[in-house]
Length: 210
Image 1 (cartoon, rainbow, N blue to C red):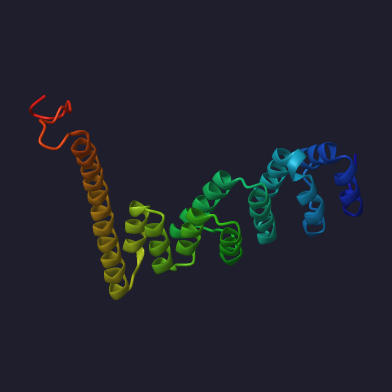
Image 2: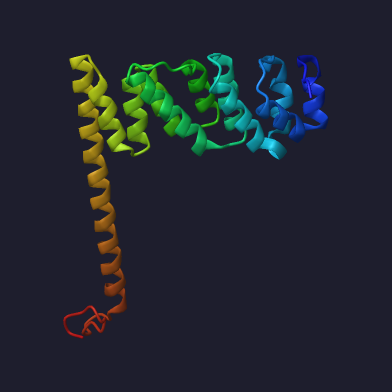
């Protein structure tokens, strides 16, 4: 079957499964921009096939638009796990000075819009916005991630600032945990006190007199 660009939108609307199967099987250079609306319409029923097709396209194309469309479909489907994995892979490529075709600005806008905070941390790192990456990591209690990206900062003053922020947040976290433990102990003590009668020996099983 020969599929032509001008029929794709119609075919995807009426025969989404068969069209995606054919596209994946016989890869052709097609106008993906014209397919955006059709692909976003069919993702609920044919999500897996649409993603597999785009992954096939990405393996053979260097068009950033394809990567943007892939991330958009993942975000629309609320597939945060797969989106996070993909962004982490691309961030690692960038860090190792390998070619990455991801549009980091678009990815950041997408992650912010859909509130994908952990993915946003890695996109900030791709853009070398280490202060934002560390700050968001600390808000998410991802201390290992915060420390990792603080070390990537090349500016000594910035690195010192980031490590001070990490140390400060770590102290706050420690104090909060201690306060929670102390409040729990206090609450337990109050329960025992209330159970005991005035001028009577405490009968609680935790009492030394029991």
